[in-house]
Amino acid sequence: MQFSSKLLEQAVDEFGRLPGVGKKTALRLVLHLLKQPDGEVSRFTGSINDLKEHIRYCRTCFNIADQDTCEICSASKRDHETICVVEDTRDVMAIENTNQYQGVYHVLGGLISPMDGVGPTDLKIDALLERLRTGEVKEVILALSATMEGDTTIFYLYRKLKDFNVQISTIARGIAFGGELEYVDELTLGRSIATRVPYERNN
Image (cartoon, rainbow, N blue to C red; front, top):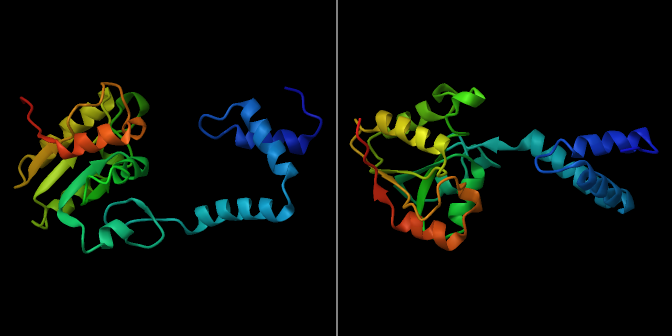
């Protein structure tokens, strides 16, 4: 792709670094920004700067938040005896959109994937175990994607959690194998949470 301006090329290169954004899409986005009033562009770049400078991660569940404790963890009406373990913030949003779950969450920050160099110590597993040691948690729902990495992580977590006095369950598999949670429709995901089943696996 030939560019008439080095500045244009640099901007397209930066947009092209975003997931799922190719060169043509990046160029279209940059040209769109160039047509916008200065105030609009300033608001756009300002929101990105604010995001990087001021975003926090909940000290309890590690969900993205504006404060040290997210709104879900600080809500007294939530069921704090039930923890839903998910891969990342996108999964929290997907489950919240179903309006079928009233417990709290724990965001692992990824899945165990040896091929990608991600091991158990790279995830927020120790923090989850600390939450269970309080004795307040009655159920842990393992709501991870129906992939090889998801199943590997579920099995590892089960080995870590089975000695605690908690019920361990997984979402019902109305989700096809290989499917990622964030792409599942809300009705299917909601039913999968509502009809969750105890996790059992031979060791």
